[in-house]
Length: 362
Image (tube, rainbow, N blue to C red; front, top):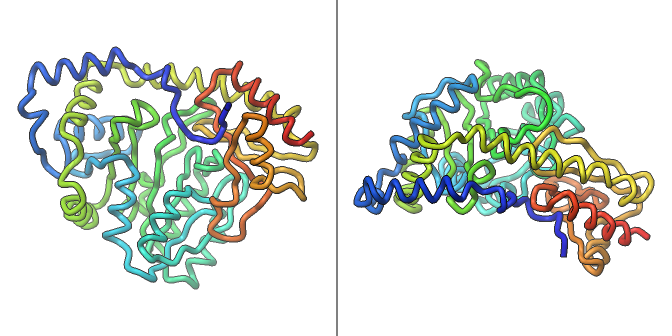
């Protein structure tokens, strides 16, 4: 089976030697501290290292602005627990990250989709919907979005920030993929916009740039909601793994994470290009797809009349898989949509996978 379904980092690109050295150093230098309970807010050295990285990317941040979480998924769960009551309105881009829809659904929130186009969420639609819906928060992945790979342009980010200030809702800006850029220039975070700096919660993750097995993420938030998230985290797990936080902090001190990101980005760029180069012959005539500037996903729309969910069974019979797009929609699903991830396989494997995928439509 060649799967384009899971959004998994390539395991052969993990910096195993760097992490082994970091674990060895932590367990040699401070084993009792690393194996002990810790503070809910997180390891002070790790928070300081994250604050320096965010500040270097034009988002001035103090270590006290941050809470370390067990993956950025926990950060989303904590915000949901502290900011939402059953029946509260949550605005989401449509399509949306599936686990976010599940999180809001479990909380009993009323999820309202906001239309998107090839540049992401449409500000005019957001403004119109927010004017009639008493939204508590807007959730979006503005850079290399999951599932579409789209990136929200700077002008739209400013418009989103202004809409939040105008209508009084929180923005949850989820950014697990932002450092995996293969083309173009960095776009400023919404959290950096003066219009919404007091109402934007930024979520970050080390899963895509270090290793997902560490389960390390963080949230950067204004003081009031940050304190509430700390209390909620105390009830959830007391704190994130002490030893993994210490290792990540040590890795950031001793290794060059930016160089590692360049290495994996070079590999992923080649894999993205292999996928994009093979799609014209793998997909039926009339299919459409985007050209993401980074991240892990390509969003495909098959010609009218094709159902990606039904066709998945045919694809699997040819030992290739993808994710149908319909579950990502909070509104009316597009049965012809599907998501392809390009990061897990080599260009050669991607080529073979596309040859198998072509048989699905033969």
